[in-house]
Length: 87
Image (cartoon, rainbow, N blue to C red; front, top):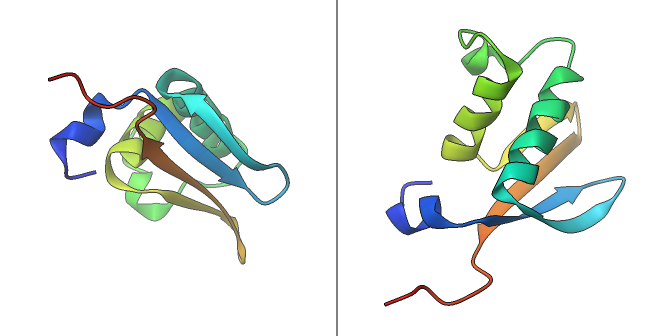
């Protein structure tokens, strides 16, 4: 997420193959992503240097929008704004 406005967002659309689309708060998305990472046998190679699934989830929220759970099956998340920004 390179746009600084995106860091101010409080909600994400989460896409899971088995559950479809949901809107979660930022805290719920972080918890959901932490759980997804905990269920993997091994974290993705670029996240292995981080000591916990929570820190890995935080990094993913900052840098990515997809996590492959197994070949051909991935979950995705996208920051959304539910209200226009305050001016």
